Image 1: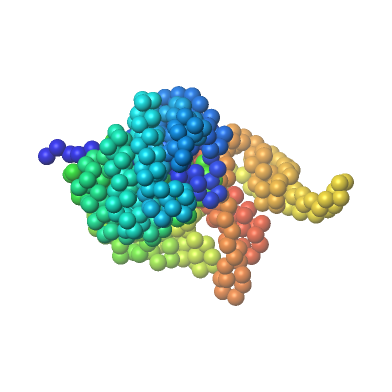
Image 2 (image 1 turned 180 degrees about the vertical axis):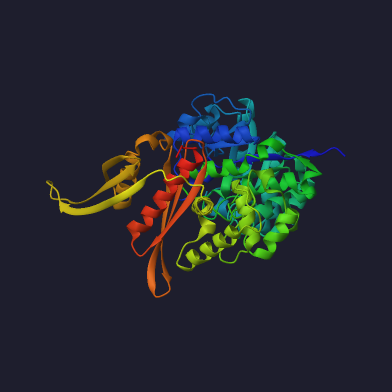
Length: 531
Ligand SMILES: [Zn+2]
């Protein structure tokens, strides 16, 4: 049976750019647009020309992409002609393949927000669509508040959609702008719209305010819609947009959809999905959501020993799809709840072959349990676990020794009379027969210590040049009777690999030192630095 084409429209750079705390530069936008294009997204909505300098610059020149580059903007203002509306003129001049207009499909908004009439809104839709088509653009109309509007006054909401479609708009997109519509309502209303407008001209734009944006998108497809709008990692105002990172694999891997629809994302690109998702987090300087479906670090993680032994026999027992299909990996958590099978599986993944009856396996498990009792958490620190295992097997060379370090924080009033805090670290390291002393200043004591530690490792320096710290997290725990500090440090290197290390101590500097040391030694092991 021939499959129908389903189109994906990404609004990470427009709706997603409205996320609290997100501020894309032009370079970010170009990089993300290329990444979306490479993934196989059909439409990349890159911004709102005229609304801010970044978006205006983005659309000032042609950006060669395979995807249809889309500019967003309002239909002509009520009471004006097209040529008399500078915002619309700028939008029509933008170097874009497609224009996505937004218009109000809820009569209440027309009266209260726009202070105009329904007829004038409909005329504005028709005039705007016509003028964009005359400019050679493909046209989409986002019907804002469509579902609330349809519930209040179906004839008007439908008239908005119809006006755009009849005028030649390629897509009429039904937006759940407030994000409060439920899946069964979406399915019912989209079904009704598809009686008036063919489904292959209908799109869905769902917000996540009831955590149903993804489900609502699928409900719309079931009812006939053939375009899904969404954003990477569900970025977007308030609770976000429908998450394309969850939608794409579901469409490709679940027979309910994959048997009936084709999308522009090929199988080999699906395998880059976890990387795409993490790259965006990286650009936004956010730690990836460990529990994100499909791509999160915990998405295919198993903790309990009984599950782990079943997974080793047959992964399908506890996995709804194979992790490799989306570029993720199976992870058997090594923690105090885990049995020998988890440890064996982790050792196998790391590439350390050990006989299952080797007494060192039990010793490693005991060590993990003892350490977790005092605050370590190895399931969150894969690299520290790997070092622990390698040490137990005698496979970590003695690269260098930190003979001592000294961290100093000085608070003083500077020459301008301002209060200033300066941190300085001194580290004394022994590499072979050489003693190296490094001094660094940092924005805080941990930063100073990190800089001093990595400043001069003698003959090992060239192995750690690509190492950088990407995240630093601190938690105060109550282990037993005393409070201890747990530090988790995430590092990355030039290959793009990320790893996490851990330190636990009553002293935050000491905990940080342990985690920093593990990160450096892990990098040396990974780079094959000679003993
Ligand atoms: Zn939106």
